[in-house]
Image 1 (cartoon, rainbow, N blue to C red):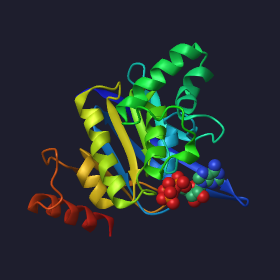
Image 2: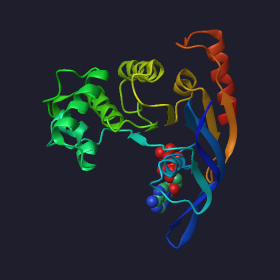
Image 3: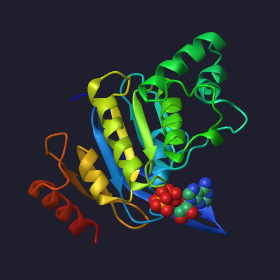
Length: 243
Ligand SMILES: Nc1ncnc2c1ncn2[C@@H]1O[C@H](COP(=O)(O)OP(=O)(O)OP(=O)(O)O)[C@@H](O)[C@H]1O
């Protein structure tokens, strides 16, 4: 499996009220063509780690090494759509910001809106959509830049359980079917079951300053059955490491 990005001994601190807050304390991780879930206690530095992978946050020590050209799409916890733009214009925005011709940008936006099941909703405004539909728009907007790696920060935590479960399955289908450009996914989550359902590799972090305490490889065949004995055993194993 090709490695896309290597994190090498990453150290990161923030200054807070005159004190130095050490957040990441020597994180080394290879990100390949796989689904990685990052699991860790509140405030340990998970979102900071995602921003470092994306190159939008600088490291104090260590190195983020990109193997070839790697681009990112970002999906946040709650949709960050512009309320005065229609769905299609929200999705096209990252392309237009990069200078892509408006017509081409809107065509691409339409393609990705269809892929996330929102064909026909392109002229709606965000407030006319349900929470789940808004998160689909967010996903389309992350995909429209045709990223190599999709970074997701608790993307399902604000959704009702049924919508969340449907979107989890759809994200996996989109990725596994190869209809998008995404080769690897890194998802921050608090949810052990979600990590076992989706990931190939679960990276468990310690409380701040975060170090990697354990990496669990999940070898269960997809689609995974939450009710199976193997699934429950893996969930139990991960709970043992996080508690
Ligand atoms: N730009 C910043 N300036 C100062 N402190 C920051 C900054 N970004 C993050 N922090 C601090 O770094 C720590 C880690 O934050 P981060 O958001 O990465 O944690 P997290 O594990 O994602 O948290 P949660 O699980 O609650 O979402 C927190 O104490 C936070 O207050």
